[in-house]
Length: 268
Image (cartoon, rainbow, N blue to C red; front, side):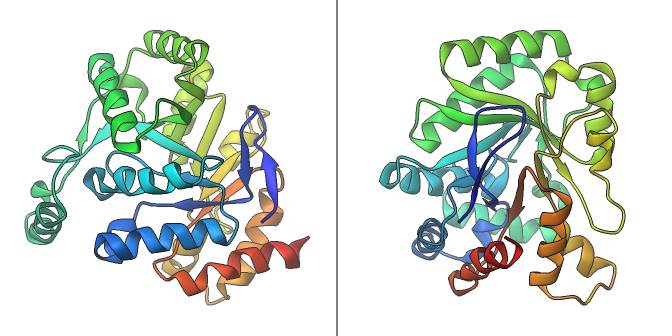
């Protein structure tokens, strides 16, 4: 799979990034690990995760891949946390998610941008991932009013200097991204932003003179708005839109992973 150097940092990533937000829904652990392994076999070299994904299970699943494939890189995030913590068993997570369909508060995340909590979260992520280094560390859907931006910038820059993280930035919707770009652009050397082909929300980044780096959400947005084009066609257009960066994609079925490599071959 074609790789790119993400604009604004030295991170080398596969043009498509494998997202793990829905990894838990694949099923038991063996199936989840098989899917991640198949992603590597099909050329994915970068994975996107967060403590909230699978209530901590996604990071734990990725530890197996990171151990076997040392060249694989990843993004994880900080600021949004799982109800009940990130160390629950598969059964406990399954039951909490099931209960959350009837009682949303049971599975509602905790949002906390206090630096004390962030330091604890970083240690937790490193432990679950089985690593002492995170390639890209992102504030997860940050709101400028919920954090002391200057303190965050200082802390993250210290982590880069110490070698604990390779780069940092923000991940979220255009509205959240714009708030940070307006007030504290130093927090956003790398931006991961929700985008779509029709509304082109990621233009919020280019309006500040920055290139698109990481975008996501094209397929789900298209389906929600009645776009019946094939996945191949939608992602082909997305690649033409985000020409220099990387796009997060996902699937629950290993046999579909080859399509992403084929799409890149067709575009190039």
